[in-house]
Length: 438
Image (cartoon, rainbow, N blue to C red; front, side, top):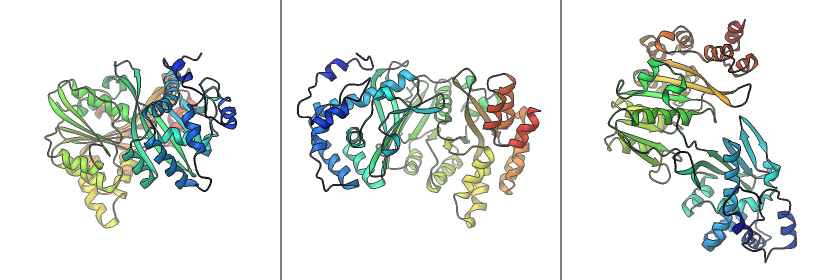
């Protein structure tokens, strides 16, 4: 019997009456997981033939709300099997549902996303129902309004921090069905000094030494931005008496208050939006504000305003370099406002950390980063719209803690942490990388 769940035996004994022969034959194709609870097929068999697409999903959502708790619990246990497998594989993400996944459960391990046939194959309708069962009525409303919803998922499995394991989940429409991504939230924080930022940058990230300014941690999805932010929060939490407000969608790692009060406010549950969370934080006497993501001009403006008022602010962007980050922030505004935004950004910006996770030759991944620490020259370059000059400032700014991504990739290649091919593949500036590798 598989060992993915301590409750697996009971799960198998939930019963099998009421299933159609066709549904039972579909369930028999599963390898390392038990059959779906009979309520799944009872509900699916009740769907009117005339219901298609969003109407069919709405029908399923209405049925879920009226189910008995024991039936909803049985369906949640099946998702728990998938999530437990992600922990066993040390996967960063799990994807399933919708036509694209071909009925399989996919896991991202060491950067590669692949299906795991041993977890069985599923009909899209079966997964639609399992997914909807994870949501509250409020989250269902948001799903049908926005065609996507983000939420936190908690697994009754104790992590290394002696708390239940948590996942960041997003559910979305996928061609008349539902897709689900669940990202594993680490249960152990990195130490700030282990990230290799150097003493100058580490000092600048600490409230004790620098009490204001905006720090942006950037990178593509899955580049470790959240882990870096959590390391910064944890370092400050153990260093100085202060008040930290974290605004997330959803909230990921739950910090316990140590020297700091650390508050977690989840968008959609505790506060309507990132912008509202930032504005409200101004009245909550914070010292540091962590904004999960600057997604739109309203949130960017709120972040600039709260930083301009003297607070130390951290946030993230989906950009791959320091220069792209600056240009992206400015480009979020109409042309007639961009000069004003450049001046405001130049005044409040302290640091940009752009990072990537590169595969190591022997498995696993390692952090490569680009770091811009704001100097008077960098400030002038932003104000004048000459951001292209900033790359050379980072190239020559090692004494101030700065580095380009290419310099850091070259360092990792020299130390044999990554291969030269990997260094070239992950470089933003291929020309500079080739010169370094000669």
